[in-house]
Length: 281
Image 1 (spheres, rainbow, N blue to C red):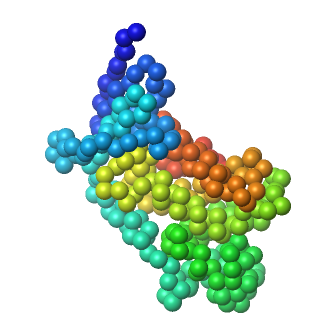
Image 2: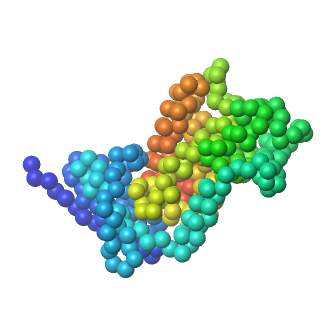
Image 3: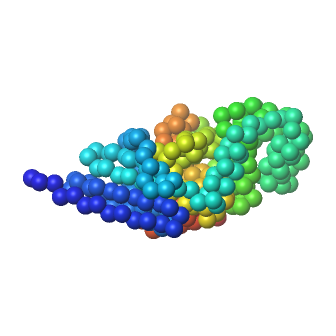
């Protein structure tokens, strides 16, 4: 049987071009367009990055091959995208420093947002265990994801306080006897998103990254919003699987896959349009 192939090219004002060649067996129905949506299923591990080449003036092209399907996306960042990407990458590189007054204040702000009617006795206190830190000094748990993981938790607490409190207090659903620690789970979610979006790469290696950069150009808080969505998705999957603490990594992997699927949906052009965003309140 001969293979029928289609090639389609879409251009955006921001300099995004996607070229796809499909085999009949392909089930992918996503194309890149002016708002930054991109082709491809969620599992980025199946994609391999081809040799970058230049098309036109300052346009970098990266090819992906996935089970007989060839896809190519070319991106030239707009000034807005580049500026916000630099800011986000800078945030990701800041380590938590317990000696910095601004980092200490952020910790106090997190406590105040989490337990507004409960006085904090100190930055090193057994009280922190109530929030789901591993010990009485939460600064030791930030090593994996840095200061941005604290910023994410604080953003969640202030922006979606109802959802934050529900997850913190493990309300709703049938809960396991050995639950995930709330705060440490939040740090792990930040780290998972950093890996999923692959923002440190000099060239785009996943379509999820390219889609997110378009969202970031529209909203500089896109990463923080995605974090909140990720947290509620993780908790929902935790309940659906009747998971226990030892299954946390598996739940986190399925959470990542769900986020990738939603980011690549045709009608999702911003974080607020992701289906799971409706879980937040």
